[in-house]
Length: 338
Image (cartoon, rainbow, N blue to C red):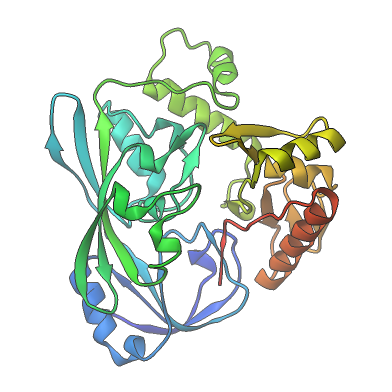
């Protein structure tokens, strides 16, 4: 395995930020990862496992070893009357994996079409969209403990999934490399079209008979219409999480801002639409140099070409401060800041 020095990371992050890693290598299985970890250029440095690079913002050069997960393969590992269990390598492209499952007529992931990144990141941040989250059909994963050099299995409960959260973002942060992920997919679909503009898009498409393929196509159309393609404009998708507040705070907020966009949660809590909050603060379409807020979706910060990661981070802090000042709500970044 080749370990390269001073590698340009621009091709490996969807923001298109120009930064370098002191050391860089790839691994295609757990054995190769273990060998890399034993190399002095890796073992004696800070290290980071890199997936599709779609959820990171590089604010400086990485003075350590960046190891890119390129574990591939999709296999059916079990089946019963109702479900098929499909295992995918963590380095598989997420959208490609979703399309494979749809091609096999396996339901559960169709609402998550066109989300950027790789399979390994899906349970790490419990990705979700259009009323579906990974935890809804996640079965188990295998992860390699970077210190103890062993494989560990995690089931749904072990992962402690929450809104854009898992155990790998907190107590196990930077301790594991996800190797494979297994999903429990339905032979009989349960269509979820109530969220966002899916039903309207299906009608616009002229869909007469609902299918997981039709839902996937609708989601792809919606996402393509309002989210920038990272190949054309650097971005990492939604930069901020939708904040949750208690009922009393929501009711006070609604008195002052009657049009506030919110969704009810259990236990008298509400999830606010971060995009709406940001837009009300006047950020939609804002641009300073090559760092900006996307003109069609305020949740998305963009690099129009030569923006530095530090400039995008500074812009994100301005957004956070303005939302806090206007609404008394603190936005949390969804993107991993390096």
